[in-house]
Length: 126
Image 1 (cartoon, rainbow, N blue to C red):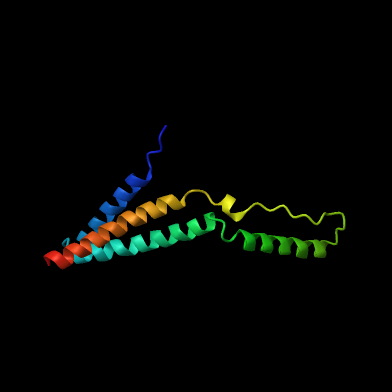
Image 2: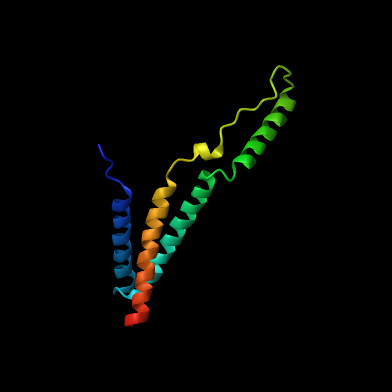
């Protein structure tokens, strides 16, 4: 069974919501207001998506491993348990992050394209 809440359907609902919000706030649909209202959620979605993509790429794995190793050493010194081995098994941070970044990047890119097209329309037609 296919998931009915996929990226295009959620993006379409978000686009319709932004247009309804524009009608409620400004009582009209114009290129300038459309460009402004689409840019803010696009920026937020792209920032979240690119940050999670950075985590997924493994950039912070070394720092995550170092902090986990240091915290285990501190806890071991507090417990004074000499039977534990020195080897620390820590899963990578990039393994814990799923593929949810694709949703944020695709939705944010779609909203940003609509915002840019609207901005071009503003400069050409108004």
